[in-house]
Image (tube, rainbow, N blue to C red):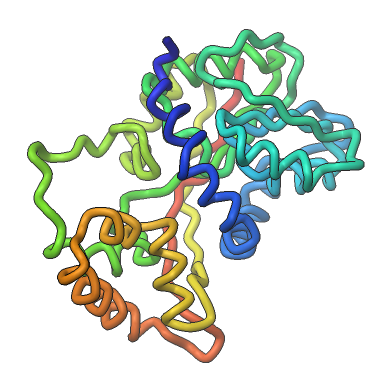
Length: 275
């Protein structure tokens, strides 16, 4: 069984379907961060690129628009089906369901790229070492990952508001466990890449601002699908749930602007050489 079996099950279940429904919203919300990451990767015409955790295909399509030949890989069948629909008629883009941690690669690619798709490996050093086998000796790795949740108000503001209503975990959560914020620690991230055999690391802060919706209702609905409020909706009974959601609404109110609900985001933009 794959080391990533739990993640494979998760992303092929309700989570994958949820992200497909939210695809347009997610692409719009992450557009500026996506552009900054692709600019850093600087794909050249005819370069061969692997887009790891390509999801619904938006980054793969944008990389191809820069002239690259793109292989988008993911473990989620629902998201890959959406990616195939979106890339129909683009011969320079193809997708396969592939576990990047264990796939057998050939060293024939110029770039391994990912936007928020590499934080879910059960054994990240081994997974990155495996991805390195896909690169030519002069190839490069470029990816975007989140810094700590506390540095990301777009998720932390509502999260803190609803935390008092949620049951306490039996054991403290492991901050390095597979998940969106697994690479929050810069030193840990660098050690992973060093262990995996990469050189010339650059781990740079990238800050931005995300729009969660045009109104508070839209923002709450979105975070109820993807974000801390999804746990509230899943775990709380009908009496407590509206109280917790009201707390989240009040916490988000100060971030309501004429053009929507906007909160800060904090990422690491990572570059490393294969050899």
